[in-house]
Every structure is written in structure tokens, then in C-alpha cells.
Length: 152
Image 1: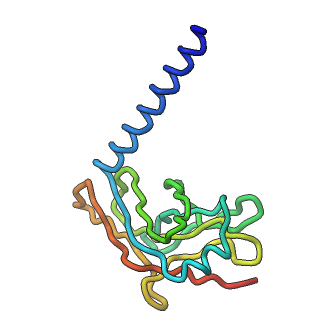
Image 2: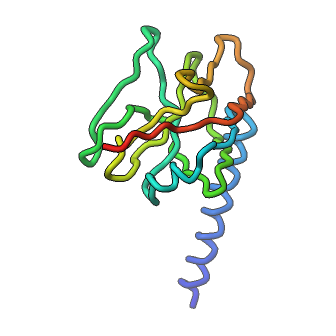
């Protein structure tokens, strides 16, 4: 009985710490918001392992790529966020280094190209730009974005 109570108490403490860490990230970091147009297309090409992620862009304007579970994806160590069922996203993370970041949908399902960059308009990527003098907390609203998905 004592072990069960201790385990329950430990679980409550861990959950409380996790919640406070999430609030600290939001209060001191970056929040990226927006909505996804053509959500039916993204839903059709994603599943429970698909996610949204910011992708860092090098000063030379390049993004890294790597293979994960047989899929060619954009390279990023930044947090992964589930694709929202309603198409409205709110990505909260710690502060980022100054630079450019692109929003991508990653680990898309077989039959598509596995990853797609968000666009604000045809051929205009949805970018998050963190200036050198950025003050956090910082919120960036990307507005409405779309993920053009090509079928293989």
C-alpha cells in the first residue's frame, strides 16, 4: 500500500514539473501560431507519427537533410509537434538562436514525398526570422499556410 501511494505521489510530482517546464518555455521562449489551409490534403497524407517542426536555415540559405526510418527528411533538433486535427497550430518552445527557420510537416505517409515546407503563397515559404536583438518571449503568427504535397 505504501509503495502504491509513493508511486502515485511520484507521478503527481513528475507531471507538475513537466507542466511547469512547458509554461516556462512558453513564457520565456518562442511561440509560432497559424492555421493550415487544405487540411484535408495534409490529413490524407499524414498519420500519428507525422509532425510539424521548425527547420533551421544555414547562413548560406541551405537546409540539412537526413534519412530517418527510410524517409528523407529535413534535419532539425528542434521540438516536434503533432499535426493538429483542426488545422490551428500553436508551437511553443524555448528561445531560438538568431536566424531563419522554415516550418515543415515531416514523416508524411507512404505515397507522398515524406516532408513538405509550409507556404504562405505560391513559392513563398513560411519563415520565422529571429533577429539578433530578439527579445523573448516572442510570438510569430504565420497566418494561413499550406503544405503542397506531391504524390510519388
